[in-house]
Image (cartoon, rainbow, N blue to C red; front, top):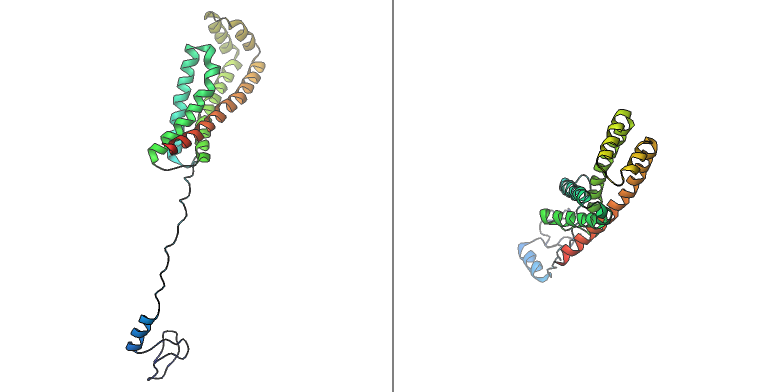
Amino acid sequence: MQCTCGASLPDDARFCHRCGKPQFEEDIARWREETPQIAIPPIQRGPAAGVKIDFSNRRAVFVSVAVAMVTLFVFTASSVLVPFAAGILILPLFCFAGFMAARWYIKQTGEPITAQSGARLGFMTALWAFLVVVMLCVMLAIFISNPGWREQLVSMVTSQGNPAAGQIVKMLQDPRRFILLMMGELLVNFCLFTFPSMLGGMLGVRFYGKR
């Protein structure tokens, strides 16, 4: 005979001399009745890890790009229709963009995200819009660096009869100064795009959780 613990037992042994386990069926049944059954508590699982919001999240990329393009369209249209209000609209508009990006992402995926992830989603939205503006500025810088194209742009601005046309033409006559001013404007726009959009993303998560 051999016990389950590995000890070798004589044929008539009723109990294991090493672990004390009974070897006969009646002894085993009595031992099971007398031994208290210990309930194993269920494993407590912690809360699910938050969803990662970054450029590897395809849904987050899609939502941020779509909201960024709509925001740029609204901003451009408002700047053309109401030029003096463009500087006032930029802060609430991008705050609303981050808010809508967070709300749309949660609604589409059904995944709860943290306020930090909402801010990251708002930053991604603002970043896509900023990259489009950078591309347009690079194209404009290349355009005015060509003397022939610059003259066409000057004549176009002059023909519109804009009150600020004289100042614009003066800046265009010095391409280097114009490009430096444009780079400074890009830095300001980066801050005006990102911070309100990040705040909007955090607010979108907060308000969606309270609904």
